[in-house]
Structures are given as C-alpha cells and as structure tokens.
Image (cartoon, rainbow, N blue to C red; front, side, top):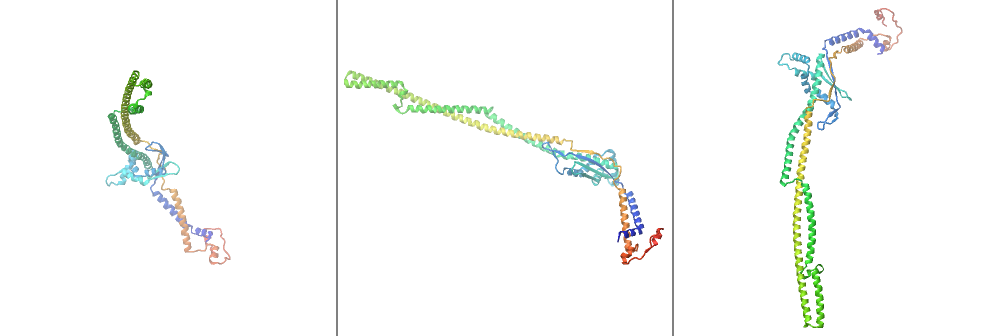
Length: 455
C-alpha cells in the first residue's frame, strides 16, 4: 500500500479519526478535571564536604557515599516520626484535621503517626553527583501543608543528624568516665607504692647518694690496692729469721757490721802476731764478741720492727678489705633500690600518661556530646507551590490527541482491510494487474459530487 493510497483511505474515513480524537480528548479532559490536584514543595540543603573526627577533632574529607547515607536518614522512620514536633502551629492544625478525617472516628486519632506515614509515602530525596546539595520534596493536595511539612522534615533531619552524632560521643564520654575512675585508682596506687618505698628506705636524693657512695668505693679501692702493695713489701722485708734484716735499709746494723768486720780483721792480725793467749788478742776477741752481740741485738730489734710493721699492714689491709666489701654491698643495695625506684617511677609515669590521655578524650567526647551544630545548612526553604504538578492538563491533552489520532488511523485501516474499496487507478493496476484506459478527472463541486465519480 502506497502513501497516496493510505492518505485516500484516511481522507475517506476522516470522520472515524475525528470522532475518536474528540472522544479521547474529552475523556482525558474530564478525567484531568476530576483527578485531585497534587502540589510538590521542595527544600534544598547544602552539606559540607568535611566531617570532624570524634577522637582527634580534626576535619577530614567525607567518605564516599556520605550524601547517599544522609538521604537514607532523611527517608528513615526516625526522622518521619519526629516531623510532627517541629510543625508550625497553623500546619499542625491542618495535620490534626487531616488525621481526624482519615481516622474516621474509630478510636483515638494519632496525628504524629498519620503524619509519619504521610511523609514516608510522599517524600522523595534527590541528590546530584558532583555537588553537595540535597533536595527534599514532598507531594500533597494542599500546597501550604506540603511546604510546611517538608520544611519540618528538614529541621527534623538536622536535629536527628546532630543526635546521631552526639549519642555515640555521649556513650564514649560515659565509658571514659568509668575508665577514669579505674585509671585514677591505678595512679593513686602507683604513687602510694612509690611513696612507701621512699619512706621505707629513707630515699631523698638516691642518684646523688649513689654517686657519693660510688666515689667512696673508688677511694677505698685505691687505698686497698696501696695497702696490698705495702703489705707485700713488708712481708718480703720480714722474710724468715735473721736473713729478713735488710742491711741497706738499717743504718745501725750496717755500722755494726762494718765495725765487726774491722774488729775481726784486727783479731786475725793479732792472732798471727801475738797468739790467742796474748792480752791484746783476748781484749780484741772480747770486743769482737761484744760487737757480734750488739749486731744480733739490732737484728732482733729490726726483725721485731719488721714483723710489727707487717702485722700492722696486714691488719690495715684486712680493715680496708672489709670496708671495701661493705661499701661494695652498700653500692649494690643502692643500685637495687634505684632499679626498684625507677620501676615504680615508670609505673607512676605510665599511669599518669594513661590517665591524662583518657581524661583528654573524655573531655573531647563530653564537649562533642553537647554539640548543637552540624555540617548541614538549609539553602532554600520550601514555599507553597502556585501550580500543581499533577494532573498536567496540557500534557494529558497532548497524549489524548496523539492517542485519538492513532486509534482513528488504526480503526480506519482495519475497516478498510475488512471492506476494501477502489479509490484510485493505482488500486486497480496494483490489485487486478490491468491497465486503466480512461478516468474521469475531478471536477469542481461539492464533496458528494467528487465522491460519486468512481472509476
């Protein structure tokens, strides 16, 4: 079927298309007039791209999906259930009346519950990728009611977001307060142990005392080494018997030995000259004997002196050794006390640091639990819309017109197919395959006259 044949069919059955067009447009107009008018009120919120860390208080970029999470909070039952508390007086009166009408006198009306359901059914939240603006829209049959309710939804959401932020901080603050009691007790116990230890050992300045005792130990060690050297020398001088006398170290013995040697030489000379019975020889022999006795006596005195000196040196060495051992034990005891004191001081320091850290966090969470600010700001408040969003009469009429035309064309084609007519010479040529010898051209006249000129 060619386009010209289609146009002839539609022109021949134009009244069907016109009738369906009128019917569709009329029905759609009536339906649009009978449908209740719906108004959409919208408010816009701007959300900062940074959030504050609860522990450190520093600002950090918001996590991905933050806006979507906030949109779900707006649509939550928690927010919907709190909207009634934020309504203005005039809007609340309208909500009470609507809730009473919907309740129909069956039991007690609950405007808050009715409004929560109304908000959840008609609320929509929109966000655009790339910005931090969130649009909250509410549809309703009354523009003032829709605008007032959606503004209250925004306020309820802001307060809910603050509550969701402060509740964990409040719980953290309570937990930290309980931990502070334990940490305070630990700190008090550690300080008590340190104080008892210092009082028990009489510690005032342990490091200074330990330095002094170390100096004394070093001095005793030096004196002990000197005493050991002196005692060794005295032992060597003392030796065994008469050989212990050191002649070069004793002038009297050295002098007596010289006199004895000289006297013995003279005695030998007299023995050769006079003989042993000569008086000079006997006198010289007596002198030699006297010198020998004196030498022996001096040696005995020197030996006793060396022995006494060795005994004194040994006694002094033993005393210094005992003093050194006692001082060494005292230094070791002080070092042990210092180690114990250092351990107790470290325990006190760690307990103090833990208490200070917990105290700082507790104060931060306490301040955050009292926070009344949020990173959400109302950008544009909703105003009562002047035009309804539905029904859209113009759009409905356009749709009805298009539908009427389609139905008219479809019905015309169906009727044509069920009762085919010859409307042009091309129909004969295409259908019968015969050439057309002649045809009567259209002549001016009425539509009935043109219709009567049939091939």
